[in-house]
Amino acid sequence: MSKIKVAVVGCGAISKKRHIPEYAANPNVELVGFCDLILERAEGYAQQHGGRAYTSYEEMLKVEKPDAVSVCTPNVLHAPYAIAAANAGAHVLVEKPMATNEADALAMIEAARKNSVFLMVGQNQRLMPPHQKAKEILQSGKMGKVLSFRTSFGHGGPEGWSMDGRDSWFFRKEDAIMGAMGDLGVHKSDLIRWLLDDEVAEVAAFVSTLHKAGTDVDDNATCVLRMKSGIIGTLVASWTYYKGGDNSTILWCENGAMHIGTHPLDQVIVQLRDGSVEKYQVGAMATNEKQVSSGIMDAFVESIVTNTPPSISGEEGLKSLAVILAAFESQDSKKVVSLS
Image 1 (cartoon, helix red, strand yellow):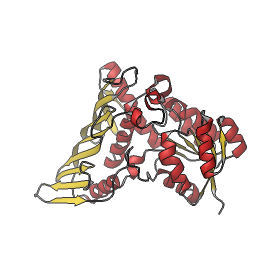
Image 2 (tube, one colour):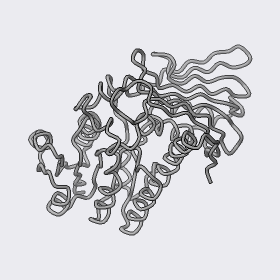
Image 3 (spheres, helix red, strand yellow):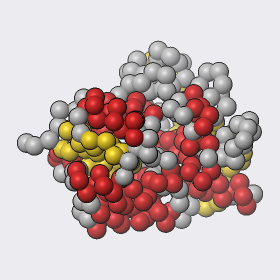
Image 4 (tube, helix red, strand yellow):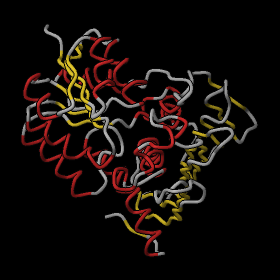
């Protein structure tokens, strides 16, 4: 079988740490093009992995005719670049948040449908081993019904992660549109929907810029969610956890509690009401400092190879994005927002 020709647009930190090395490690992939406004970044990857460097996305699509494209650009460019790739006949993997508004997300889904290509969103929390284990335990029924939850994702901010540090696009509202909520909050809205196999019905939120000077994107958010099943819980996203980042979830259930990502070694801890405790060491979650494979690129390639629609589809990405958009609406209106 011939290899899948993959092109990457946006050669920043997420490409460097996840997309490019994970594609390079996949035997089914040939990296054919790298595109970035800073040509040297694209050239560095072309020299390392083969393929050509571009500053023009349109030219890369036309010349390379890739089978698949990873869109790793600033948030505001996700939709136009994903749509262009789909219209060029390429499958699309887009970083989260898939878009910055519902209309763009719907246009991306329609472009993929019209061109008979796959659209997948890089919501990697679903694929992290502790979350996979937690879902397996929930599905076994031993916890009984989930009653409430707390899910949180915080670190010290993109200046410690982005290749441009404090000058990163993450802090420019015209490029990012949203801050910690688009960066981290959407990971947790996706996780909780998937983990509970439930949809968010209502959102009440406080979204603010508390500490990042010189930016008007949000750096903290606390949301109260009511799921369709009636489960209630909180979702927190923060760029000001300057010491001790957090990517944890606690579920309180009829038969006990499950702690996910709260302990460095025992990634899943189940405390049952009968006093018994079960600890699972299933592998760490990826952090900015300590990368482990996200599984996203392999899942995307597997979808293409087997011609199977990705489980983390554009439709799924839109449902997770809708929760974040509702949080901003709640902050602006000072009201509880219902999701249709």
